[in-house]
Image 1 (tube, rainbow, N blue to C red):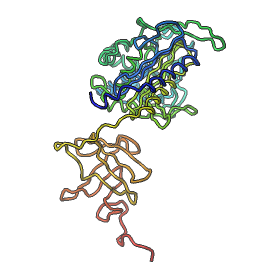
Image 2: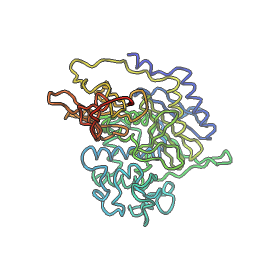
Image 3: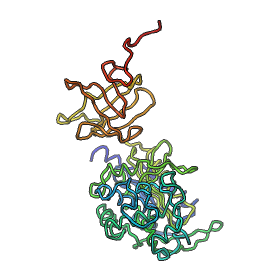
Image 4: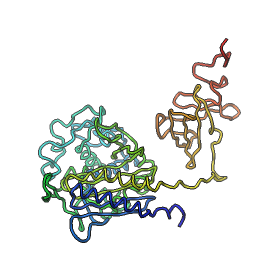
Length: 461
């Protein structure tokens, strides 16, 4: 066992802090039960639970309903269709699913809740009534499905994910849940995640707001709304799913595709704490830490899942109460407890091997006009461009087979970085989104836009 794997085991003080946090959450949230898990380095390093029932509490194998965390599973299926070339995220829905009445909304907009669709279905509260009341998409969307112009703002929409589920069914020719099981659950080994509850599972409860009394919540099959919130799962399954959302898995989605899901595609709704929304994933900044994941709720259940790429950590919290226990907030707190108490060890530095093709000629200082920049080569072969000793535009770039680099983050995301060469093969300058980066400020030998004063640099008269 190497040093990094040995450090997966949490210290006793950290484990006590985690137990204390969920104990407080269960007591103050008046939840019949709560179960939680923390994942570090791809391994479940802590599990805990609290219950109002004497004796054995729930463990990581007990199913709870996970509500809108289901949306992230649905988004994974859509991204698989994209990666297979069966659709484009910029495609209008009408290209693949006819007759919805909202066909101008794009697939990306549905994933990011920017399609302008209503937040809920017309008629009775869909989460607490049988899906049979809404047998057709027209019943889910209603006569006026749009509340905003598509693309104009982030507006969370449950019916939007019903459309994505129907899109999956149209392109696969199979029910959404069957596609999910064969393409995601089985490859990832999530055998305790399902559309219907499987024993052992928790019962869903409503807790009276002003008295310590409980009432069972009805259990409904959501029908067409299933892709928005149907699933049941366990903390152990969700821990494995969270690790997949961090690293990817070539059997399901590559690392670049899950990273794309974690990238902001929509600003937050005004007044909300989230930092935005990706493709099927909520984004949040907390304590200087960037989190991605999703919250979930259905009558009788609340759930939260957050991950931090920088800390290689994830946390999951499930509880069986309609309200009271802020599961997503508690999950974020558990993650912070570990990250703050036991910071991640960096991987050992290692040089490139002799076989590696190292673009050393583009590394080092460059100048964009008078702004000093530096290009650094990272261990994974990517490039980083950023200002020297100050704030400004920074970005990471992926190497392409043609010798260029594609921006992955920041202002230059999606833009192409090129090393422009002289006749003798040496690098003259870098070209990036019409900007010219030179080895000297306003190098007269490079094609600086607007030219360089022939008198060059000088002092005052």
